[in-house]
Length: 321
Length: 254
Ligand SMILES: Cc1cc2nc3c(=O)[nH]c(=O)nc-3n(C[C@H](O)[C@H](O)[C@H](O)COP(=O)(O)OP(=O)(O)OC[C@H]3O[C@@H](n4cnc5c(N)ncnc54)[C@H](O)[C@@H]3O)c2cc1C
Image (cartoon, each protein chain N blue to C red):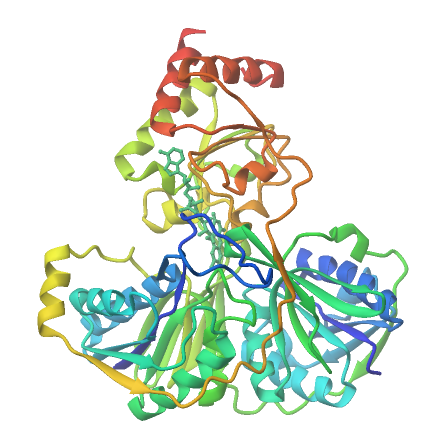
């Protein structure tokens, strides 16, 4: 019992989220390092089919209409009893709009420790370990996974989603649901993102603008460059939060994932929430004045200069060529 | 509506971060602490709600570094009451300890709504909001980018990946983790902050003990080891531009 690793499967609108497979891959590394079983926890309503490709030793499935779509209250109730009775060594949840709030509530309710932002869990000589990615990707923090049961929220990082997928379905056991009377949070509806004028997830050339651009008027510099390159403008979250570009242009955890031939990052630091959505790009080139900016860790080429000098010069040369 | 906003200070990532000689924490000697960015959105959202529906906004933060500056700025933006928690705070206090400390003060204030940033970049033991909510016995919704209220219910916009929004109904009292305010945080002139320093007072609440249980112990910190860092293009601006144009050609994009 005490050596098992539980992974809480996230799904949204009938689709298992990618982070679930990443967590199964991480959970496998940890489970095999401490000799435990890897157990997937699936909460849903008429959702048993979602268990089909989970690379776990077993799947525990709880069915209830209150679990059809995610709400924090229902998930907390569903998991609290289960974790308390089963006492797994670790429970992995996504560091996402689903997992993060459930993990926090459970940590207090069950009085068990919580480690967040983990890019890795694994075992070293039988001891479970975590690695957390903090400070915008600039610092990694490592330690022993606290016990007896640790809640862990995970970010994409060291493990590949494919490793959490299997074409051999694991055995599914149905488990009883608690009573879901008196829920204080209910989902009214989903609102689909507004369709923008372009779909950045399929554009081949992207000019991505970050907070380094400083003000809305300066976007023109990037637009001129985009025009000269035949590319499309997209942005990091602060630029979109300021209302300078619509959310359809947002790249990152809360926006779109992109996979262009060229991703030119201008004045973007490379925070994990941004980076996770750009690693599918063929070539990343970054322009940034901070030589330690994490964006240079994923870029193939970099220029450590002021964008206000380089971008106009680049546009001019492209127009001339 | 009676709203409490919780703010946290975090290392400024613009400055270079150093790991101290123990190897397990950040060196705080030259570290500059600034308000957690999502907390700034939480404050903005609180002021927007107050302007729309009336009520009072109380801002609460731990007494570290320039908390006074952060609180006076919040006052200048339109909040009504400022409280700092004094005693025993170290720069690296964890969220479980902070949540327990905040909880006792929040209870006294008896708010309808508690707003805080959805996360902070140095959260190692979960984000603050869900912990506080559970200690208070209130519901919590995070990743929120819009709040409207009607009677004893709130309708909140919760963000999911890809721009999908879940519209959720939440009974009050509640705690919300704000990702983005409905509008970008307002700018406030330095002169108004100076004025706030003269007119506003910061109440102090003294704590007995900070208990970090519930969080992990870090044995080692390190800067990420990168497999391969970017190949840096050197030269003057025109040389770099020329090299980039050449690269674009090699990549087949021009
Ligand atoms: C729950 C959650 C979800 C999030 N989702 C997303 C998401 O989907 N997408 C996203 O992007 N972010 C997201 N974020 C925000 C993320 O954490 C970062 O705050 C954000 O990515 C930073 O954007 P930035 O790199 O543009 O700004 P900063 O981090 O402020 O970086 C600006 C960079 O510009 C450089 N710079 C400044 N001036 C110049 C100049 N003159 N020339 C060249 N370089 C210059 C600086 O050196 C710096 O590296 C999310 C955050 C949270 C909490």
